[in-house]
Amino acid sequence: MEFPANLNPDEASPEWMNKGDNAWQLMAATVVGLQSIPGLVIVYGSLVNKKWAVNSAFMAFYAFAAVLVCWVGWAYNMSFGDKLVFFLGKPDVALDEKFLLGTSFSGVFSYCYHDLFSRCVCWDYFDFDSSIWCPYGWLAKLGVIDFSGGFVIHLSAGVAGFTAAYWVGPRSDKDRERFEPNNIILMLAGAGLIWMGWTGFNGGGPFVASTVASLAVLNTHVCAATSILTWILLDTFFFGKPTANGAVQGMITGLVCITPAAGVVQGWAAIVMGLISGTIPWYTMMVLHEKVSFLRQIDDPMAVFHTHAIAGSLGGILTGFFAVPKLCRLFYMVPDWEKYIGLAYGLQNGRTSAGFRQMGIQIGAIVFVICLNVITTSLICLFVRLIVPLRVDSNQMQIGDKAVHGEEAFLLWDEGEKFGNLKHNNRIYDSEVFPSIESRSIGSIQMV
Image (tube, rainbow, N blue to C red):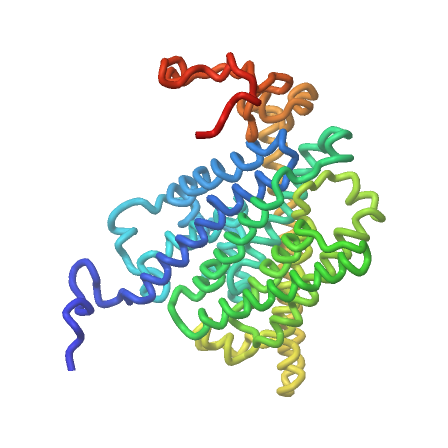
């Protein structure tokens, strides 16, 4: 029996490359890219006060471009290439033909592409990737379980964002007192893009189109949905009203929590993780934050400490408890797969010490990510401060986008300018066919 002609290997499709897996990676990477642009752009631009909408959206936009160039320029090999020190790889380019057309994990050509788009969220991914995801990383050798980036991306991003917020300093008192979202509907639309894009984020984690990938996708959405509903119920019970903003926060905490466990836990465990990710971060954000002076002093308007650092830590710990040995074997496909076992199954199967060891490794990884992240982020902020200020001056802070970018997100006419005095830049309005509306009152304008 022969393969159809289009499945036969050739120079463009070598024997080591599985076309189905490669196609899934390209698709997964693309939907993950949509999480950032436009997903994060819309969410960040909508969550903040209208005077900072352009700045917040623009930072997400150009950061995507900056990380892309860094990734192919030096960071991919820093993550998966030769070691420089025990927790850091050696920087090198990933741009030449021989490298790009060669085999990668699982015979997937487009791994570099997927991994780039999945990780365009924080600079320090490069450090932790080399320790946790690289087969030669010290935590990887110990047996840490991080299916798709709960440690590498989300815990890392939460700690880095919170640390950077400490060095940058708070917003103005006026903004901290009243900083309402400028567009709730757009915020929900952007959140929907992020949620659906997580299909590629976690589903692309195994680098193959497999049953594990399918399970990861299902668990992702089940956990996120449970977390959203839990957050809404808590808001309603304690504050009397469900909020769209709260639902988005619950979505994020659910997605972050399930990420390290997505393909290695059962569906019922995903529901339990959703209940926990919708409860504990809600408590730390809505109750504990106001009681702890240290948390109040650091201005974290996007609440990344709660949605990413807390939820990411929870995900890592719960992964160490719920990870199924068989699913870990299907995901890792390594000879010593027995070392991957959740504590719940260790207790059930008489491997209690192995289960506690797994929990210890997960907690150790959390401590490592937090400590290294605080140090490296602080050093970067201090270095940047030697070159440029970390924050704008007080006058620019009061004005916002207009002062920083010379643009505003929602500008129909200048403040205080009446509709009848609007100046047109389009010459068509000066023609006889379209008489100027400036000479007519609004009441006399009729729709044709």
